[in-house]
Every structure is written in C-alpha cells, then in structure tokens.
Image (tube, rainbow, N blue to C red; front, side, top):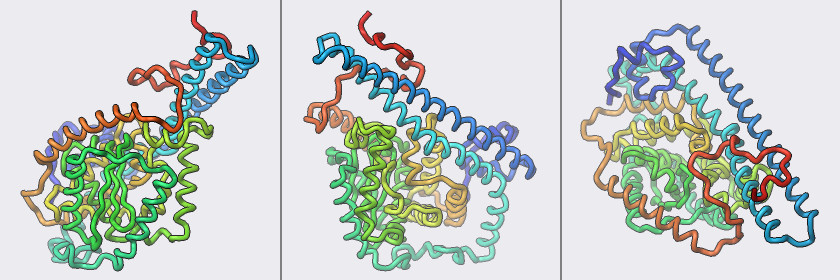
Length: 465
C-alpha cells in the first residue's frame, strides 16, 4: 500500500531544511527521495533546534517568574486590604472580588505556562527533530521494505501475519485484565478524576459502533466498553480489559473518520497487547491514583491549592491525560511503537485509511500554542521510532482502493456532538457546585497573556476611578 500524496515538489523540495521540518509527515515521505541534504546539514539543523528550544524554555520560565511576582503583589494587596477594617464595606468587597478574580486569572495563565514549558514546548521541538530524522532515514528504510516485499519476506517482520488478525495470538489471558480495568475506573471516580459523561445518546452510540467495528477487526478477545467524557482536553486512552475513554475535545478535533478510527485502533492495540497490565501491579493501583490526584492539584494551581482539582478537570486543558500515571496506560517507548504498528493494521483491517492516525498525530504536534497538545502527548509521547514504525507498516500492507477516509455518518455525528456539548455545558452552569468561585467577568478570546497584568506596586489601583 504505497504512500502517495500530491505535492508541488519543485516548490517544496527547494525549501531549506529548517522549513521542510514544518511540513506534514506524509508530504515529507513523498519528498524524502527527491531532496539531497548532507549529514552536516542535518547536524546543523539539530544544533539550531536545540538552541531554539533552550531560548524558548528561558522565555517561558521568565514569564512564569513575572507571573509569580505579580501574584505576590496581588496577595500583598489582600493583606493590606485586611488591615483596613474588621469587616468589608461595600467598596472593600468590590475591591476584594476584583483582586480575587485577577489572582484566579493569573493562576490559570501561570499553570498554562508551566504546562507549555514542561510538556507542550518539548513536543513541538521533538516533532521537528523526528521530521528531520524521517527525511534523512526514510529513503533507505523504504528500499529495505520494498526489498522484503519483493523477496517474499514481508511476513517475517514482527506481527507480519496480518491475514490472521483475530485468529493469531498477540497476548494471552486478556480476560484477566477486566477486573484490573474495573478497579482503575472505580478509583478514578473515587479520586474525582473522571469528568462527566456525554449524555447525548446518538453521538455516544456512533463512537461505540465505530470502536466495536475496529475491535472486531483486531486481536482483542475482550469486549470494548466505550465511555465518552465531556472534557475540552484533547485525549483518548484505554484501560486494561477493554475500557476505552474518549474526550469530546478529541472528537471535536478529528477532521474525518479515518483520523478517529486511527486513534481508536491505537488505543485498542494497547488492550490487545496487554501493555497496561504488563506494567501495572494491582498493589500499586491505589497509590498511583493518589499520586495522580496530588499531581493534578499542583498542575491546576501552579503549586497553590486554590482553584481545586474538581474545577481543573472540568475545564481548560488540565484533564486526565495530564494527571494519569503513564504506567497505568502501558505507555513506554517499546509499547507505543507496538501499538502504532498494530493500530495501523487494525484501522486497515477495518477498512479505513491507516494514514489517519499519522495526520492527526502530526496536526496535534504542529498546533499553534503548546497547551492544547500537551495532554495528548503526555499519553502519546512523540519520537521518531513511532512514525517510522507506522509508515513502514503502511508500506507493507496490501494496496487497496476501497479504504475509507470519511463518511456521512461521521459528518452527522460531528454536528450532533457540537450541539450536545454546547447544550450540556450550558446546563452545567445551572447545577449546584461543590465550591463557589467569585463571579468574574468572562475573558475575551486570546487574552491569556502577561501583557494585561495588574501594574506593580498598586495597592489601591483596583478601586474604581
């Protein structure tokens, strides 16, 4: 199944290496045999990217320190305000609420900066390095794959018996993982790590039907149990025993059915290979969740217990992907490569274009702004071996003109999903909350930056003019 993507090669191939590594993966696969860069060109690029990464980390760290300073000034204003009288006057109460709102706003920005620096920003640079590696190494790898196929040795690769999917044995005793998965789900709810489920039945039924189709074309021997979580976080993950969780944030982000099929196939591959169960000992389960809850509180507040874990998991991008211990999900370098290869096979065997996962992966890694993609890459860490494994497997698969990219059902689902998320989010605002936060004015779009911070040494500047 040869990879073929129309590319204006004369224009694109003339770009310098530093610009080429910003192009899509599938485009680079087409270009790789046509471009000619020397080993020293790639080495120079890697050094340049390393310097840019250090500079970007320093910039984000400086912004964090500036935010810490402003937050300290605001808390100083509260101390000064508390010395003015034993009880608040109406004007004092207004000033206090204004300070509270600004502290909460800046704490959110501070938390996002931390996530950018520690998780999101490294992904962006790792992704560019992976693209440089692909340009350098894919031509030789493609020749090797073609030679294996021509020599009749394609089935000698690991998991090369693709015609036996569903009959071959990838792992034994998947059934033993069901209880482990049930305990994990119960503990997530116990520690308030579980966002609410999407209530729209038709949208959930579509996701469940797609997952069941892929499971039926996989090596799973346990039924898939799908839960759609109403969370802005762009993520999906599988627990041992076939428990699949997909966030509405991810469902809103995928652009066609093959992308969603690719994500689901990858997650079910972890279940088939029992990756989570291999890494997790039952005795450690409760301690992992307790540790996750503590980490979540720190991520949400930047080290200051103020906003609360519940609110952090309900809104923004601080979701389960940012707090789950990856041992629980079976995430490590070897297992991710295996899941990519098996997931590619399962998407193909289910009738979908297996390039969908690569395009989604690439899109997430190339997002403007690091925070949105940070959670996805916490549970799907990027590195070159993953892309090489996926594209090599695509080359090995038999050619087919009937592979699906999209469907009418997917388009209808996307519309239902958008309506449901909006409706259910609106209904949430009317429900009683565990903690009442100050009623703060809504932030205009795109204002989460340090440019609109409260002026320094301004003990009374929050009063009305």
